Image (cartoon, rainbow, N blue to C red; front, top):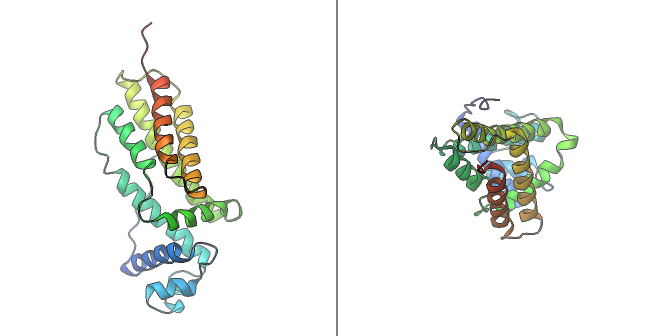
Length: 200
C-alpha cells in the first residue's frame, strides 16, 4: 500500500472541517448535530448541507480530513535511518493528547460506530492500513540494511498496532496519563527482543 490520495479541500470545506472539530470537542459524538456544527461555522445549516447532504457524509469527510493531517505529521519524520524512523514513528503514534482530550473521546465514539457505518469503517481501515504500512516499511528497510533481524515484518507491525490501539483506547476510557508512556516502553521492549540481532 502506498500513501493515501491527496485531497485538496476548498476554503469552505476547510472551515467546515474546523467547525466540526470544535463541535466534536465541545459536544462529543453523541450530542453532535448539524445545527451545532453550523453554529461553530458561523453560518446556517443550509450552508453545510450545500456541501454535505447528511451528518454521516460530513463525518466521513471529517475522518478523511483527520487522516490527511495525520499523514502530514508523519511526513515530518524525514530520517532515512530505519532504527530512528521506527522510533520516531512510535513517538508520534503514542504521543499523549495535548489539548484535545475531548476530541479523543469523540473519535473513540466514532470508532465504536464503525461496525454499523460502512463509510466510517472504510476510513478507519484506511488509517490502520497506512500506519501498518509505515511501520512495516521501516522494519523491512532495517532488515535489508542488516540492522534488524530477519523477522515477519507484517506480524511485527500488527503486534505494534495492537499495542498502539490498546493504549490509545485505555488512555481515553480511563483517563490514564501513564498508559501511553507504558505502551511506548512496552513497544521498545518488544522491538528490542524481536528485532535485535543475535550472535549465532
